[in-house]
Image 1 (cartoon, helix red, strand yellow):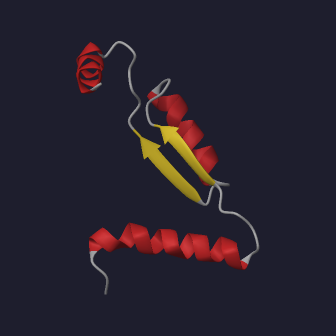
Image 2 (cartoon, rainbow, N blue to C red):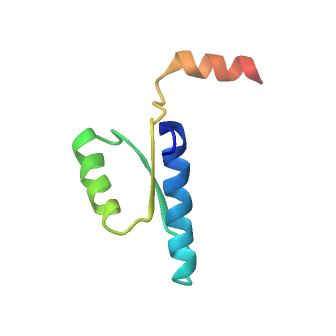
Length: 76
């Protein structure tokens, strides 16, 4: 049995192999969770899950987050 850390990679390999066997590209979609609101993003997630082969969920960047803006500026 594979370790938990390898499960996502194994699942991704399976999805890509399946779409390849069907002669098509895999559809991967990204969703910033909670943007613009949590209820809207959850509705979008359910709709995307009906058609997407791969879902990537992310943390949205808030434009008024000055702390992260300062760090990003310091890294330049």
